[in-house]
Image: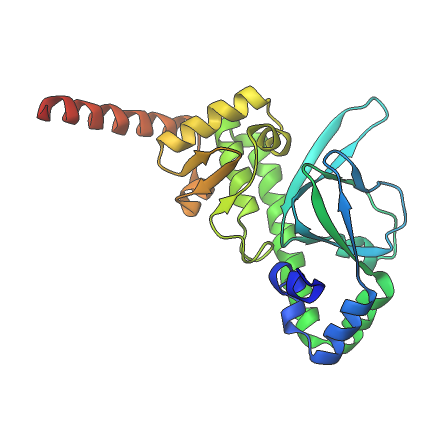
Length: 246
């Protein structure tokens, strides 16, 4: 696929630029293929580019000297991250790691700043993205403190289908149970259990190496034990009705 086609698919902001601006971006941007598990951007290094995920899946995480890691968010294809560090001309405060083989675009800081100076639509896009990102992290802080594992997995998946941050995603995401666990900060086994619970609630369908969302608003509202019990009651009632009709 040509670079221009990839950007049209995975960069909503690119489609809002005029012809000269798109030509400059295509000239300056670079694309690298990153293996699963490899570092895309390292904490403590000066931010020199805006990072886009053209394909694959990455996680944004932090860690300490003892080796403890915490995932802040996942970024699927179509997501762009790191604008805050560029706007403040500072070092990155997090690692970006590929969870699966990914195509990563890097828009140089100079081009990023040129777009800020020349494109009102680009500025508007960034304003909406920054506002949505703030809301996302406030919600995540609340979820981590108040919700059980099933509900955290539900909200984690809902984040990955955010139409403002990741436009054009559709309702199917290629993601494994292990990757869900990384992003929701639960074990693979617990992620598997949570996905089964959410599937029983009619919110999603688990496929081989993927998740298809059936009710995005339901995932956003899912509260855990209370909703799980309701789903179990509905399933039991359905089975009882089938037995009675037989």
